[in-house]
Length: 94
Image (cartoon, rainbow, N blue to C red):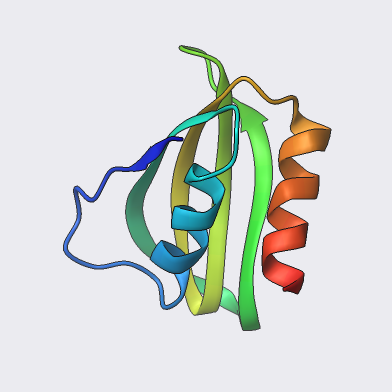
């Protein structure tokens, strides 16, 4: 079971709840939220999209979006991209 690093005082609504479920999955070591940025497009519902592989430690960068805000998330895991996307999709659909 992994852990969620809480190094920022603010997070996009719903992010921590989703990250705790991701971190509880087998093969996930850590989930670390990054900085929040303002965006142009409006995401009406919470989204977490897996994007690029991390250059260190194995894992992926993800982008969380809700409203006009986006937040980077760094997920250290042994899972491949397809398996991690499937895990996230299952959590968001539940």
